[in-house]
Image (cartoon, rainbow, N blue to C red; front, top):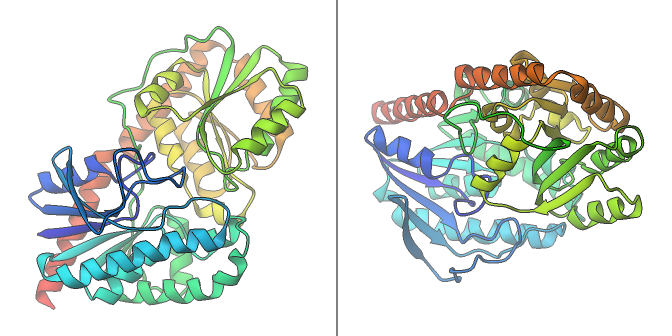
Length: 400
């Protein structure tokens, strides 16, 4: 089968769940895959060094064929600039898929944004849609200026794309139920959980930190609402100054978070910025616990942040301020203390409770999480199910 994997973001951009290794797994199953993507600019909104915008760029990464198409680079709170970012890649992808449709048997389309799915739908290429975020709900929760004006049109776009997809993958049961409530036939929907972006072969070793260290890695944005973590750090500064919080990553809230930590004169919070994947794995392995936090929004009750799988695979104990499906997975794993989101007092209390547990008990929690990951959320399990879905869809297309 000749597959076009259409995604606005791809490596070397960070936190790509279905990147090179995913494509290699599809090719190992006997399929020919071409990645159709944009020029790398996430999360800074600037085109990466070594790239420049052009009409089409062909490259090979890890043996994977990649075609890059032009877009307007942007990633900030401006709904206008973000819309230009999405719409520019939509036009590029639509033109390419329309002109090259005969070269592919099927497209696998990664959403967000939904405009990538719209390009596939309008080009009339048969496609499977991978829904990672529920739109327009996510737009409404993103706190972008002017975003509320887009909700209605985006909702109509989503319904159009859903209707034309041959099959739809959701990353959670909650998303599947939500789409059924919006009129998507249940037989079109499959739940395939995400896996860790950089999957360790096994649980990593014990912490080597001198102070009890809780680490967070990832985006600093409205969805994460890390202002609550800063408030929890202020509580810890007063009650347990021996506990340190290490933040790795960046995002639109980076400056505000640093400013608030400075205003509160916190000495127990460090901002390390963005670091390479291998380096973050080493830092997580040295930490006593990993932190997961989402905003208190009904949307996130049916969302499983990708850090959930990555943290479990790392084999470290977890403190999580989340609700819904992600909270249940973490409780079932035996690896986490889970508190409600947007509750700094509960978060600080959970961190202190974990710090007071014996090291051996914390290590057992981490090992339980790694075991749960291997049994329920692993890369091999997810890719097998994805390949079976693609092959089944292609057979149905041939019969039809």
